Amino acid sequence: MFRTSLSLAIAAVATAAFASAASAGCYSCYTPPPQPCTTCYQVQSVPPQYRTVQETVMVAPGRVVAHRTPAQYRTVMVPKTVMVAPEGVAYERIPPQYATQERVQMVSPGYSYYAPVQPTCNTCGGGYGYGYGY
Image 1 (cartoon, rainbow, N blue to C red):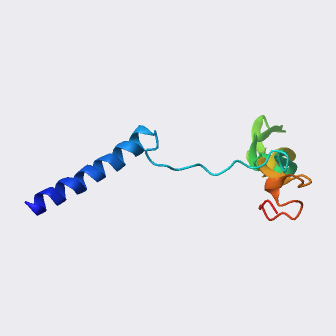
Image 2 (tube, helix red, strand yellow):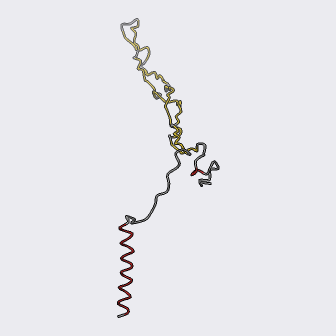
Image 3 (cartoon, one colour):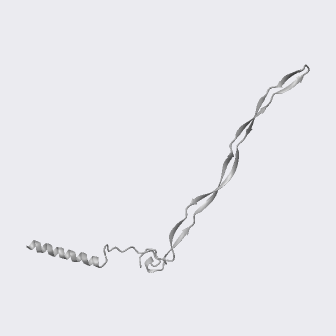
């Protein structure tokens, strides 16, 4: 009988404690950290940095062009046609062609950060930068 009444008493106290916390609207009782002081810090934005790069690129590759030369014939004193020079092929070597091309390259991307601004408020450390209200 003593054990039953003791367990009922403990259950009643626990129920009352949980009910009061839930009825107060405090389910996790967590307070978020304070936001940075707007008078102590200011958002600074750094734009992205670019540079122009010049590159030498091949516009047309080198090649060899073959030119055919026909055979040459002449008529000699006797009514006869003879070959004076045989047909041939002349090769012309064309070098590759290059050009300079410019392109824009990103050196560093843009970013934002908080920069301190004359810390004079109470939450910024009174000018010492400690973050305490001294």
